[in-house]
Image (cartoon, rainbow, N blue to C red):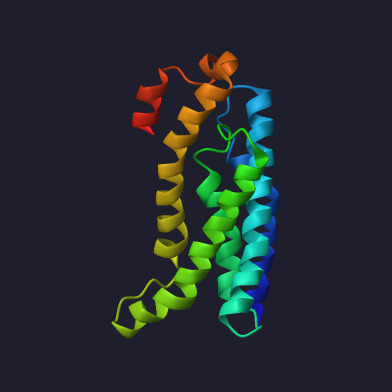
Length: 169
């Protein structure tokens, strides 16, 4: 139907532009590049995992809504720590975890909410809320790990000490 086609078109546009949104406030070109690459890896992990998990939960059939929101959740969860994450495999794992959680919530927990009269019509709580909260918890962890691994450019990124910045995040 036309609504699903429009949603897929918007998802493709988000896949193209989200990697430039996440590191928009990076202080250097190196960090901006790192943020874009990490966002691409996270989107790749969440997109691939969304298809796999949706197929597993639904007997080999793909559910449009689960794939759409599961794929986008990878960019949402990495947005807070895209410039701080050093290893690209970590971004891939973060996107994969985000898709597993989002598709699981959409497949298993959303029907429970609907049964009890709680509506999340645009899936804002599931996609943005849960992914954003998990990303918020990951950011201080990556800030601490980043300081230990790459002390030389730490001061160029943050204006505060490591513990203060992790607390603020």
